[in-house]
Length: 434
Figure 1 (cartoon, one colour):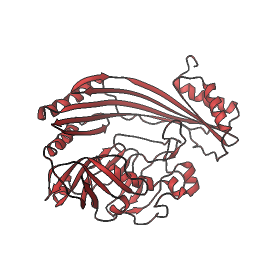
Figure 2: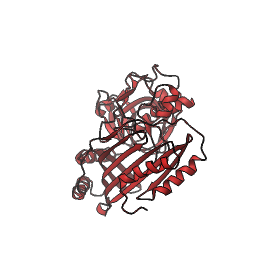
Figure 3: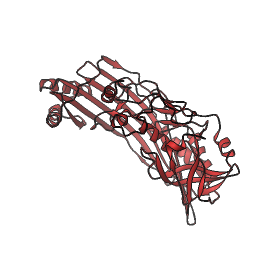
Figure 4: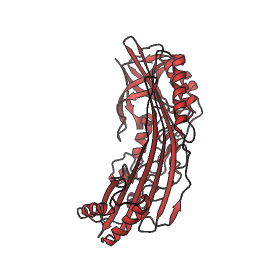
């Protein structure tokens, strides 16, 4: 550890030392985070925490060979350089492609919220649930997170931004004899949580689950709520990866300009939408608004700098690292699915016999699109109405096939992590009930 070395001076010091030790190029990515989570357990305030972390990733090239080293906290830069050089000696040479630029401080996004407000929001949600269902046991996790990202390289680039987000998670466990029901939902916002809306969603699910219902095995239409629909879009996001196109592992590798889904589907990216912001990716390339599927037609694959160079199209600003210790790879950020015109209630009213799926168990489909998942929380639709909660039920199908025809998108778009999606109706899925 170097006494008195500040976070910013560590990045500069690493760049200077890398060049002195023989590197022809170097890049530093720093991520500094501060979190204040508030936990409620079994209807009571359980724990308050404050955590802070600083991570620094150095990537350098010696004779074209890349080396990557990561350190946390305020550390000796010589030790990081030694690790990166040792790894570089083991790798093959590659094209060095760094973003050129200058110093830029992007506007900070979001406001921090005091712990007292987080506690008030958490207690308010529990009080509302318990007033309607006194026997329910609630858990709440409310957090304020602030993350600052900085990229500095030997091409003159030095850019940074800070992003503050609020997140709330509410769960309600209801035990009735030998029947156990767990309903949960979450929300991520900027500046202020909409705790009434989050509580209303959980209360609605509890009301729908007051009665039980049975469903027959067979094929029928299924509505996935906005909370469950991310399973669907994850498959399309994988298929749109430029890396998978290069590897020929995407079923859409030759689909550019082709109609691959229902015309109702438009999928795009907006780095400034919703509760998250991202002015540049983990390579320093500016992010941008992009449309990947336009009314069912595949219009673009997302790329980092290396994949974009291979495809001859350049980076789309989607070079992100799964973790500080990883190299950049194509990833999406702030994806949005254009909502439809029908409310969830209208979508339900149009179905004579089907299912509403709100929570699933197990992983979703892979790149093949095939899936078979257990329904953790779902409801039978009979003659346009929800008649009760179903248990011991599975739903299966293929995402690509299901999205071809007879797709209906709701008007109830909502953020599920970094994906904005409405409810989705898919026809002809296979239902198995025990």
